[in-house]
Amino acid sequence: MPKIYLSPSAQEFNRYVDGGTEEYYMNLIADAMEPYLTASGIEFDRNDPQQSLGQIISDANGQAYDLHLAIHSNASPQGQEGKNTGTQIYYYPTSTRGKRFADLIEKSYKPIYREPMNVRTIPTANLAELKQTKAPAVLIETAFHDNRDDATWIRNNIDTIARALSQAVAEYLGVPFKEMMMK
Image (cartoon, rainbow, N blue to C red):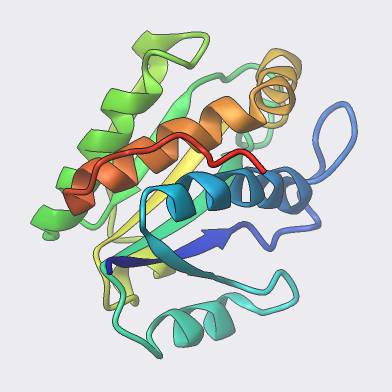
């Protein structure tokens, strides 16, 4: 059975423009992904929000995973607060499997995001969760939490985001995506 590592943000200090934190909302997305992954026959483990980034990476490298998915929301650079929108999907530049996964996320995310032309994949060697994890890894910045419209969009689309990410995971792993099992 395929297995992934979910790594929602542990950045409780990143405040949303209109209340809440990055850690809180990204963990809600991971929570909402779990039933989709389970229904699709995909096993998963998750980070503990109390862990440091180093502990998260060590935990993720402690087992063999088919994928590593870090889920974040973005903040604009100083002086640009509230002006940026969009989704950035990062992968390590030499990882062909990471790029493939990033492209699948982009494909599933464009139809749901409020500005599809602002959804893009970006190679980077600057993110620890991409360069230090053993499994092919992607870090998604779901939208900008310092932009009121993006923050509202995230909050109103937790399940939609979770479903899109889960579809990309299933497609990457070559398993049929199944809707959640109703209780």
